[in-house]
Length: 149
Ligand code: GTP
Ligand code: MG
Image (tube, rainbow, N blue to C red; front, side, top):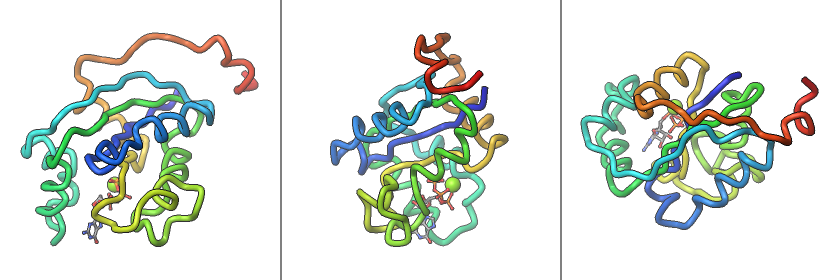
């Protein structure tokens, strides 16, 4: 099944939004496969956002990510990468639709609460980077009440 990497950023942790974020993915019908709360080293944050290293906001972005603990998670389910991005909302929270996490809980682009992988390929890379120890092995007894097959 498809998997994505989701991270609650330091502002989301500080503002008490961990449960809210988990709840939205859980209630949708996606399955939590790994989760940890941890502080991030600068070099690790730079690695995670390596694709953006040439951007003018890169330094500020890395500072933001290392400013407090983050919650790193892997979620699984049908089309979870693209659907996870929809649940999260547009990058700039002032452009995010109400009903999305960023639309409901954020204002500034540099305090946008949550990260989600933008493609299946990047999800694979990010999961390998953040969870080299591997994922939990389980399946939900409610699976057939959410998925047709
Ligand atoms: P992530 O899920 O965090 O990867 O966000 P995204 O995929 O919606 O956007 P992108 O990968 O392009 O940028 C990564 C993060 O960098 C964003 O979530 C923002 O926190 C930050 N960022 C992106 N563009 C800007 C910008 O123009 N200015 C500032 N200050 N921050 C930006
Ligand atoms: Mg991104």
